[in-house]
Length: 107
Image 1: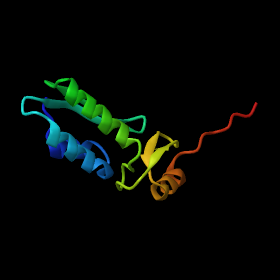
Image 2: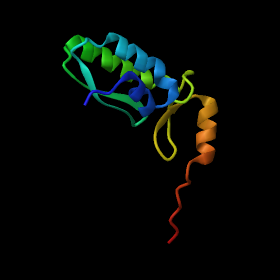
Image 3: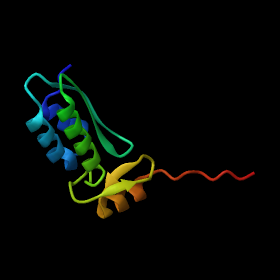
């Protein structure tokens, strides 16, 4: 399966669209993305047909995703809630308000 740029952008938050563009701009023609997603607050990109240089670049983009709000693209950091998400301060506040609360066990 070869995921297109537009499909890739729909797989993650809008704030990471710049990372997606950078990735697609650097991929050689013979390469293709098999899966792209958010996992543990970071961008994950799975590809076939690339060399070590491209894999190193993808690692850089994944690392960069931990500093970019996945909602709006402003500076962010991983935040805990229901899931780990990389968010700016504004979206982290919204996320905390909407995240389900853990129930405390009382014996």
